[in-house]
Image (cartoon, rainbow, N blue to C red; front, side, top):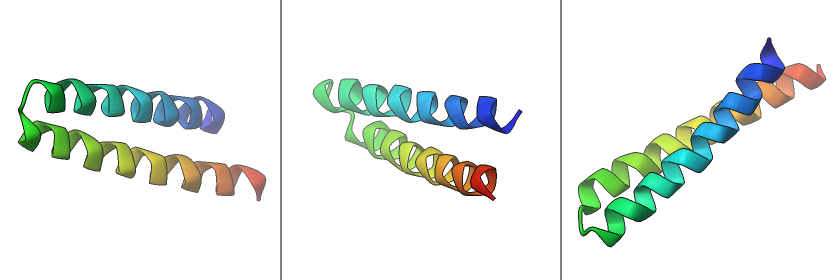
Length: 55
């Protein structure tokens, strides 16, 4: 179960980064910033899940 959450978190990071890039190209920098913050939060969650998996 944790591995599935780990994979989902990192897939979410990729999707959020792509959304941020698209919104930045479109000139909507507010949404791009929100998407980048979401990507950082998901990356943090992925790291926490990885550290708990190793323990």
